[in-house]
Image (cartoon, rainbow, N blue to C red; front, top):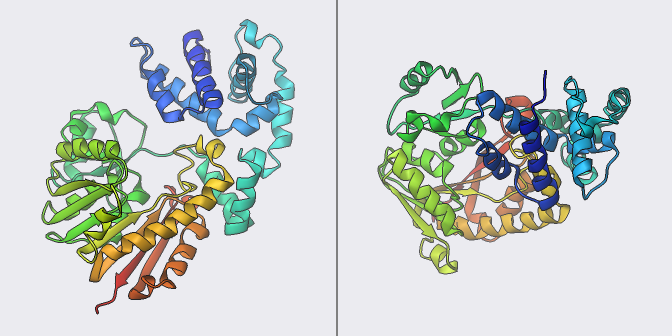
Length: 405
């Protein structure tokens, strides 16, 4: 296996931006892939996957390379050399690799991977938190699963097509997919492909959405004609799924603090042919008060640590801080208390996160049910999805019903 200079240089530049300038890996990768129009799919794959791999295994590689942050360019080359040696590449005779201790790298890898925090490449505090909340055995399995490459999963847009038709359309483009009995709208790609370039995507026949995330809309038990409020809609992945399950009938209010995200949702909704969505920016508490006791269904896809989606966002291992998690728990409690008032008597609420920590999930629900407003709700059921059991993202959802007065 040969290393190509222009691809490696792009990778080095990208890692400098992620590690030293705090840029988000997905944005840096997207930018890197536009760098050279002559690159074929193999080249693009090398750049994207190498960047993500080095970000994912940063702690392990840094330890083996014996470098310290902040990294200068030589440090990044040393980290890259570790990756290349461990991946079985023959190092070319470039000046950057002149003093690479190949045998030492392999020896240090064998030694360090006996310890979980190096083997799974994770900060000490995160490792301790995971053990405290999930226990040694489950956390070890979960971490290993979170370090695997995420699958590409599509959600068929039922407003425009069926799963079977979409599969056939993609098959004609040499994109193979599989069904999964537990996920009625999911198509799982057998090999990674850039599905965003297809006419099927441009025509709104599908969205890219993890299988665990696809469970949430079903959990909310929506029906055509209802008034449904998605309180933390963001760019609207789950909103669009709700619209398709509602068959475009009824009112679907998509709320968010950020207008920029709702603008993205409008573009996606148009492509999806979802016409019952009404975006609303949360400008003040008045926006919420106007809806008190008005909705049949409310979704609270709460802000969270994201510790269930590390395989998708490996750079968040290095960006997250313990104080952020403490802070986000307070926000989750406030959001639950404030937005639950939108549910009308007899209506239902789903609280969901993409975290695997009980303190953000079951314990939040337990606390909410003990509050003044929470006493008006009955716990119906919950579901926790762990990556090592499902093969998909870690997730949590709880269904509550507001008592009739």
